Length: 413
Image (cartoon, rainbow, N blue to C red; front, top):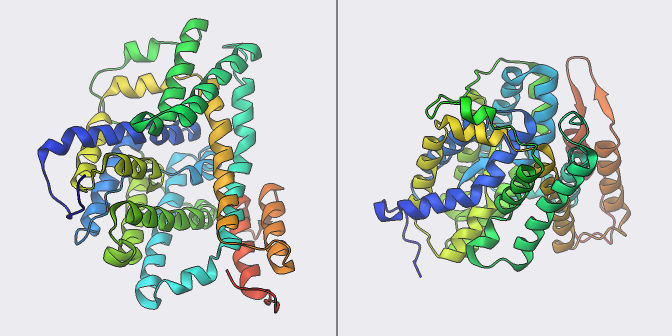
């Protein structure tokens, strides 16, 4: 067992770092695949984002890896279709700067204010809406909608079921490191099934060079994208706090105190803004990698340096990006059926673990209005800006939590 002793660069840890990237790889590439972004860019920005995070938290670097955030799948998909990648990236940069503002407020006022404006009664249902809003996209992928020219609905359902079954089996019966890569196992099983059916087109792989620059996209400022994206950052900001608590428990080192949320949120935010500068998805701390740290007892943060460097190198392998682009939609759809449901379950767990009493009228009102306004498709359009989806739900939840009085039976959060 290795004791956490801070950052210690040892090249013998390089192989372990590559192994940790393998753990994160499946979830990392799913976000760009689902949102229309470039997978190679996502690999590159995950790598440089992790290195930037380590630079900012250099006094006491937590052994974590930053990569594509699932919370941003819906807004990224909408933004890319509505405004294009370049304009959407201005929203990604702004979301990262929102983290920076939170880190500055924590530095000035302490962590207490964060729990005051974002208690579990708000955070739980907001996280739940992320998974519930995304669920129709997963179902459409499983049903093969929009892809009828390539394969039948029966083929689509069969492949999706194989992918889903593989993920479930690995999650339930996998041991050790295998249990940490259910997404990769699901993709592998679904891809093999797709090969058997004959719906995989290898043309992109054959025509792609071994070395190729990722399709970097420079951001273009668009106010609508900024306003639309920033509220979404509330949920992953809370997720970040949970992940920092988890890695602290694993390593027996209090990262919430040193380097503290003021530094880790700053690192996460700047990494997300940096990703937006290249056309990559927002970053977040990866709980899969935290799980790998727990199993291997490899606490040296330098391992994540090697994982980051490996991600950057793989970003320039043209055939890898081409291979990822050949994964049929039902393969991803089958996995998403479960993962989007898990996201919703995490929100439910937040309410349960913190003992949020939904019989309390105040709590019931907050949760109910977050759900209906976010999932029901409500849009508040103020001309220059509009709010909808998860962002609208978060704003409504925060506002109600601040203005609704607490009854004498309310025990806080």
